[in-house]
Length: 301
Ligand SMILES: *[C@@H]1O[C@H](CO)[C@@H](O)[C@H](O)[C@H]1NC(C)=O
Ligand SMILES: [Zn+2]
Image (cartoon, rainbow, N blue to C red; front, side):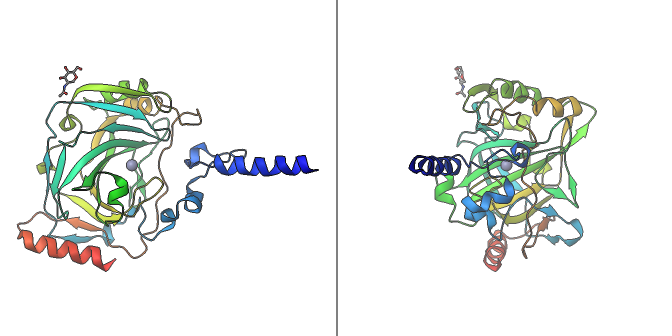
């Protein structure tokens, strides 16, 4: 009797400890991992009122002329970057020499890493959707506001993190520089493995800032636990090209921490909960006006 009670307690403890978060694609009835609908049970912020990603309804966005283009620094530098399989996605680490300012963001930001969200077999896998449409893939470039040094330090600041999001669009031709990334992902198949991409330039993957004057802006969260509500989101209107071959290949390289193929790595869209999505409109405004405006946006919500 005592022994079976002990066993039961032990089993329930074990199942609690192994209840790691996972994507819907990893979840099955005999699994104990927490799928997105249950993230909030372990990470309370995931149930907050400023969550990401969202569906952007274009006829409801507020056009705002106080959203100037961003300024990129270090995007054309050749750098060696480390790629790591994090168990739920693969992170491409960026050096602090890659920086971001402008775009009505309240400060200077240093890049930390970029990563992708994808589907499976060439099917849509973006996190943000536009008028209900999911795009083939999404690139996120994560920046931390100065002087913070980590997500933990930045998470109490509503704009402590600046996330740039690029949606991909399927084209006939290959993206000329994505194969380098796909090859690197093939070298980090399993949770925890790392590799280096030498002589990488961020400008090989994304356009220059002046081609990116049109974007959506809203305040939200990280899209993986702990879902920290500290993100000024910029979702660019301009899409990046990718071929069907590349799209199929990129989702075939890595495995989750559970050993299953790393596919459909996107969180479902979250309620707006009264937030407003703004859209930039290129025009000259005084910097002072921009800061006052951002202050208003951040305080209202
Ligand atoms: C990248 O790595 C190579 C080989 O280790 C090294 O020679 C080169 O200096 C590195 N480049 C940078 C920018 O750190
Ligand atoms: Zn992301």
